[in-house]
Image (cartoon, rainbow, N blue to C red; front, side):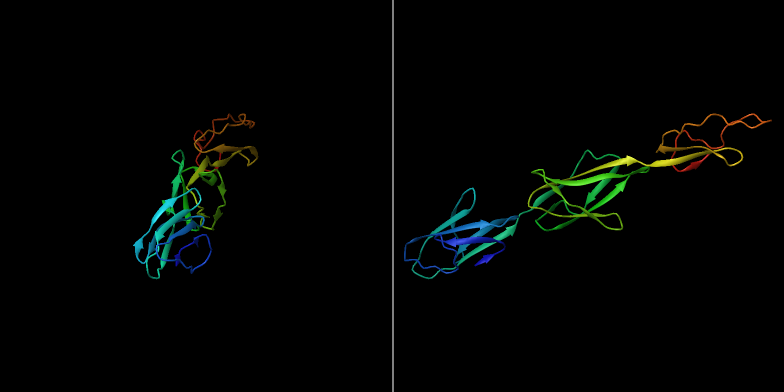
Amino acid sequence: NIEGKGTGTLNGDYTEIAKAFYKDTVSVTLKAAEGYELESVTVNGAVATYETTANADTYTFTMPAEDVTVNVVFVKTVYQVTIDAAIENGTVASDKDSASIEDVITLTVTPDEGYNLANIYVVTASGEYIPLSVDNAGKYFFTMPAEDVTVHAAFAKNIYTVTFVDYNGKILKIEGVAFQEAATAPADPYRKGYTFDGWDVAFDSVTENLTV
């Protein structure tokens, strides 16, 4: 009997039922499916001795003077979900710190004030990039592969529009300015009979769209 995902052979044959004589050595060769690992093998309830190889596990037992049942249990391997510690100007949180193959992982992205998400990606320990999907609420999702993964993200400063306007509404300059950076004013405007006294709004640390 096999529980979980994997394959097994009795004395080299892919069969659920095999025959053996009293005191014969019986070999049970087992191979877990991707993302699974062998948890246990019992023969009539007793744990069998085994040898682990690169590709499979081989369990052996001496045939008693009775019929036996071999029970095999494969379980999902647990892998780690790591958030890159070098992420700055925002946070990414995973709903799971560890997961198994085919589990769905949800990522919540929270930029710091004045920043937005510029890039996010998930890469496995072997260097494979995992596809991400996103919902209308801005949450990201991916399906866990059969290895550890690391989530990376980059945040960028918001860009705001600063518009300089003359006394009569004429636009003098439009400039895109990054969060908390300064806009550059145009040349002082001219109006006959008046002396320019300055701009009516501060623009040395921009945190929103401005009309000056």
